[in-house]
Image (cartoon, rainbow, N blue to C red; front, side):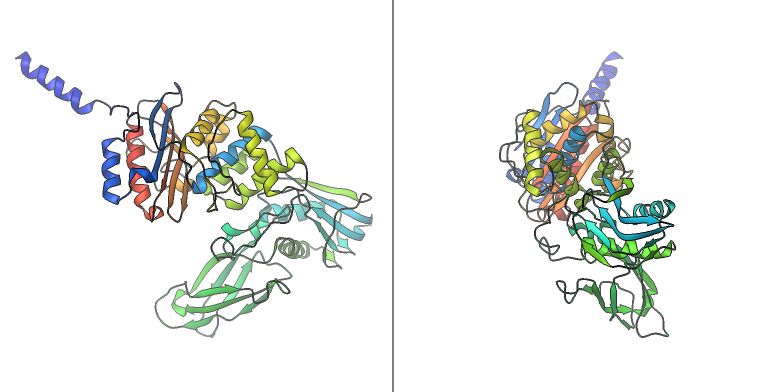
Amino acid sequence: MLKPLVALAALFAVTFHPPALARDSQLPPAVARVMNRVGIPAKNLSIYVRDANTNEVVLEVGADLPRSPASVIKVLTTYAALDSLGPGYTWKTRAYAGGRLANGVLNGDLFVTGGGDPYMTAEHWWRFVQSLRERGLAKITGDFVIDNSYFAPAQGNRADFDAQPFRSYNVLPDALMVNFQTSRFTLIASEQRNRPLILVNPLPANLTLQNRVRLIEGKCYTSGVTFDTPDPIDNPNTVVVGGVLPASCGSFTISRAIMNAPDYAYGTFRTLWTQSGGVMDGEMRMQTVPAEVRLLYEHDSLPLSEVIRLVNKYSNNVMARHLMLTLGVEKYGPPATVESGRNAIRVWLQNRGIEMPGFVLDNGSGLSRAERITARGLGEMLDRAWHSPFMPEFAASLPLSATDGTLRNRFKSPGMQGRIRLKTGHLDNVSALAGFVNAASGKTYVVVIIVNHPGAQGGSGEAVHAELIRWVFGQ
């Protein structure tokens, strides 16, 4: 009677034993099968998996080959900032009186200096305005003067990466960047009109909007609406909304980046200032703040710990670029340049003993065809982050499986929800993941997977990711 029980016990052990650890470039069979099915060869793949507690490397494939990381480079930028500046670091936006303030009237200019705040949203900008009003300021007889010299002027333009200058992900850094230079355009179709009504929020006071959208019949689609700035150099504040919109759409809202940073900051300030009951006689101009002005108000940004959460969970490019520039300006002084930011991160890596052969850092956001990193180098950095005093803040910034950010619809298998923290990355021909996996066994693994293969961003890369994470979770 014992023999069947012994045989059954042996079968149970074989069937339910956790997958064996893979070493020495040996891909787990299930991962290899998926790669074969989607047509991704091992030469186009880098994997690095490391036990965060024992530091044992349990899987490495092509780990020392520099590859295009896409947005997973943000884990380097955000952790370097967190480790260098601390979780409580804030950016300052200041307002100065360039004249005598009496009885609510500023007889002179209002100077505003940008400190590189990466998250000066419309709501925060409104609080900036209200705080000035609460200090008794009601009328400005002079100009609204912007000093954005804390950052050097950004090189290039928003169309350089993919010829999509109105997309918010292409916005360039600026020391006084407001609401990512982005407004919501709500188009409301009506059968009584041959053009839709267009509402803009926030509405810059200096925006000239030309409505050339034609209403047509047929099923609803919104891809026919176009945006253009006919004269971006001499008249950057004129935006033409054109194309066609089926009347059956009723209304829809689309967000677009418009104008340049100073014009957008001034235009939205003037709108909010007027709405709050304030009066401004002058216009906008650019000038470095003179020594004789008096500080009226200093606005603190969100702390860095909250900023990196927004960067990583939602893969915000311009915020990541602001972080890199901030590292540069804190180490080398203003004005911040892309090169000073790059140098600050390189020095930080060197001081932490993290080696990355073939490392190429462009803008720190991953919105680049030039950036290169190795899976091992990124994995070693993540391992250092895991053992850092700031590990809770950093880990909490990463998207959480089946819960939020760019992982809210991924890794929904039983038991996985909330146990996987990974930054995602996608570009043409690039698909990547980097972060931490809390396995079913309770162990935590550092995981980096980078696929550089034609069409990898279209789903084939994610198929490989899914099988690898399933394997790691089973360890």
